[in-house]
Length: 338
Image (tube, rainbow, N blue to C red; front, side, top):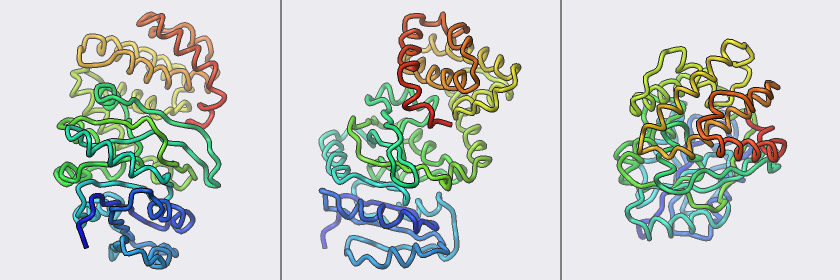
């Protein structure tokens, strides 16, 4: 059997509810030259039975004898892979049929790019479509964005295997490990987002990021501290905590007026510092910051702060433009953000 060009990997832990749909979305891809590594991380439900019910020769079943966690499971898949490219899909998400075909074509034709993601659609536990997500497309915009937040959805990624194996998923990030890996790869290679929807990302209340919020926040603090240090932006511990709650749309944290005022002051300091950095796309970051600022103000019903704040005068024209867009679309999209 010839060596497959793509190794698709999926880590599974008690995923019986959505697992069949996830597996079949890979088996039904229009691109077929792949191996499909599925690792069962000590599941106690019917996940193993579901995986083994498929007789497709492209499926390679792996198993951790005990629950080892998502990072170790993904790295075990990487070590077992044979393909030139690594594709990833989480066990509760769905890949559209053209996903691999589109991404393989891009990386085959652009050897200077190390990985690419795509646009994606967010769905709920019943598969109902909630909203679309479009991250920046170009290398320079993505690298700007990555300094402040994750600009890739894990279940949309195709990565050159030599880079994935060089860095692996960092084991000191038991959550947020995908974002940590994107930062490592983007530091040595060009990255891209295909402007096409290829994946349904599911929110159902049992996602790792939902069920282990305390651990996730610790990872967020660590990554944000490293990013700010890399950008030579000084910060206090209080500013780091404020910034980190802001990045995850945690509006309840800012119900306290003193914390809300600290946030406004920090955003002004942050954007003023960014404007001095010629490597940063200012408008990309202004839009990124304002997206979160507007959501938090709106949810806290602090509408006055949406119109009168220190960020307003940083780039008045762009600010008004983004505020207008928010006011026209928030009821369709931002209601779901938390």
